Image (tube, one colour):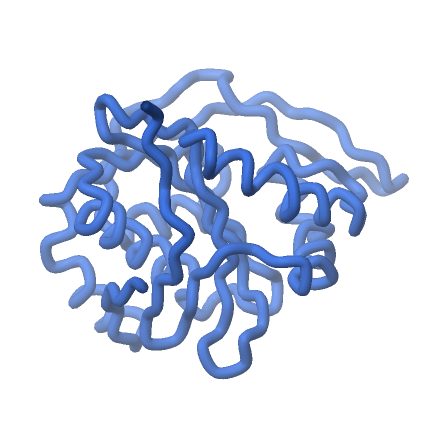
Amino acid sequence: MTSTFPNISISTERLVLRPLDEDDIPALTEMMNDEQVGSWTDVPQPYTEARARRWITEYAPDERTSGRGLDLAVTEFLTQRLVGIVQLTKTDWHIRSTELSYIIAPWARGEGYASEAALATAQWLFGDQKLERIELRTAADNTASQQVAQKIGCISEGVLRGACIAHVHGDDGTWSDVRTDFIVWSLLPEDLEGTAEQLEDVDGFTSFADWN
C-alpha cells in the first residue's frame, strides 16, 4: 500500500505552511510570473490563473494521494499573505526520502522566509513522518537557493553536469533555454543539530516545528 503525506499545517514564529486552496489563485499566479521563477524553474511563462487553478485543484491533490509528494502554501502568520510555496516530490517511501524545493514571492525575498519554511518542513519530515533523507537540487548559478540549502544544514554531494535547463528572458519578451549544472544537496536528521539556533542568529527569528 502506498504511503501518503497527511493534510497538515506547520507553524513557525512567522509563517504557516498549509495546503493550497482556491483563494491562493491570484497571488500564486502573480508569484509564478516573476522573472526569477521563470529563470530557475520549469513553470510555464506566462503563468495563467487557469494553470494555478489546475495545480491547486488537480495536480497537488493527486501528488499527495498518490504518495509522490506534497505541495504547501507558505503564508505570513499575521497577514495570511502568500509568501511562497514548498514542494515535496519524487518521494520514495521505501528508502524514506523526498526531494524538497521552494519558491518565494519577489516582495518577500531577503527576509529569511525560504530557510524558515524549509527548516520547519525538514523538522516535520524527520520528526513526524520518520523520513531519513531530504534532497535538494539547485541550478549552478542560483546562489540564493544555494544559500538556503546551506543555512538549513544541507551538505553538497556533487554536481550533475548539464542536467538542468535554466531560462533566459530576452529583450523581445521571449524565453530561451540554457543548459547548466545541478548541484545536489542532501539533508539527514543529524544535519539539523544546531541549525535552528544558527538561523536565529543570522535571520533574527526563532524556528520551531508545531504541526497539527
